[in-house]
Length: 411
Image 1 (cartoon, rainbow, N blue to C red):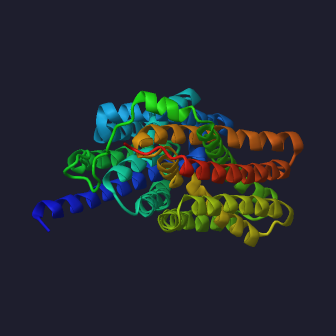
Image 2: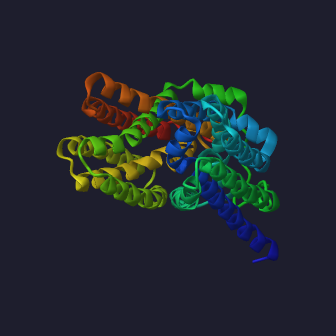
Image 3: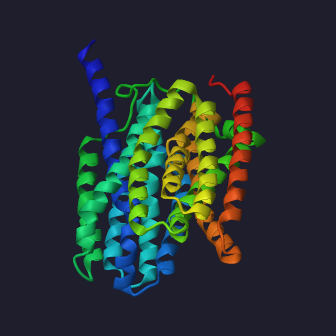
């Protein structure tokens, strides 16, 4: 093998390592650790938890809107500049939060958080892996996105002592996050490269997608049905993730047991992301989708059981099955973009799919909690979620089969 060949192969792994570190830092310190800020920030700013939680809506809306334009932005700015802008947005988000004096300040911070997450995590990683890697894309995506759980665990241990350092501890924690992100910014600036035909482990696409071709593709109803399935998955999984701990607590499970359940499932989530990517590479999209959707249904039924039994063992099983379903929000998004829309339309499709999935996040939790407020129980909405996931799975498998038969091939 020539020297240039060795360099091409080696640099792919540098790009993958940078993506791993980016996901580890951006999701770990800016998203996964957000729950530990709730009490310190609410006490420090004298605001309610509801006011704090509204910031999530600003984040999800921001991410959903910007993902729609992902294809245009990546084409005009390139991956490296967009990643740097994303990290810069996360730094600005943390800086604004460190200076916040009221809830509206947090909402502005969350808008920048949404921008940063859109440009540095699942959507961007999916684009980069698809461009740089020719084989085992699912496994590589799984490895990279599994870093989220590890990063979140480390972030909690690093930031918790700072948060508990006094009334202004949350400000110092946000500023420490800015410094950590600054290190990542420098590493990306120095070592990340945009793909070209001489450096990537993939030949250039045969033909670019024209706007007319894309309009023709999007005119097919099966694509909108698929997007509906992806929206349902985002709404259900995010909604269940948000109400699981309250259900455990209402069922009488003690705080220490709940903490242990959350810890175990957080670690297992990293394993499932890797496993789902590997399963896709070996068995394909239909088999992998079936595992994820069925796992969600089992998790929902177990959650109803927990609400009536108060069993910590069942609660743990519920969390483990939910972990098997959660890759529908991460690893599977680039896979669906490629499988449903094809390589020519991958960038546009990835942005659309990520946007639709994130829009689901914004409605799942409020719907579940509204049901509880009205009926005094989550049981009915959990059964409704079960039915929706089963319908979505059946529809998605049917759509995938149709698309496989009528696939638009590159010319």
